[in-house]
Length: 226
Ligand code: 5RP
Image (tube, rainbow, N blue to C red; front, side, top):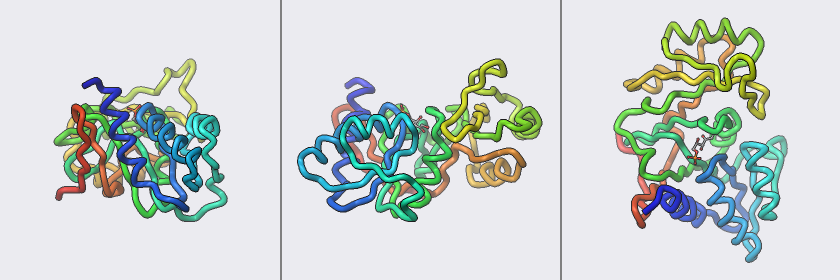
């Protein structure tokens, strides 16, 4: 079964957890687009939900699907956030931000009663860190912030390069950090967040309640393991 098919069945399984009346965070990425397409079908079939997009890209997709959207300034809590991930471990700690939307994804997830992740089987790891950890920084003085991050992680890259840095919807830059195996995600998150200039990290520690994992032609619904 192809990776795309695993993404699709995982996303559709997560979309089936969405019920009438819910306010739903809509994640970003290729897997999230399968979920948005399924939710769009359901909305056109009568499901009444409101979506809170985590990126401009997702907002455009959702509008095309005719999913009614709320601006994040209009809500203080969501019933559920649906999103993809770049990696997840057995405790369902995540690395996110491969698509550069980590700040909005995290703020939306933090406001949701439940965070449901969908992923293909390549995203499952015993320890996080094979995927370079995206860290969003403020562009002002990014070089200083990068040097401070370097003290924790020698392998750092400004996404897009210094001539034409990738700019997030949130007007930030992304520094991709090749930590290798991350033994203590919560401690690393604490250390990174203590650096002035760091806006947010792609570590989502203890936030996800479920991962809908597409493996072959089946979906496993995983809960956090200690
Ligand atoms: C975007 C993300 C995505 O959820 C993550 O990169 C996974 O993307 P995809 O579903 O395309 O594999 O965190 O910021």
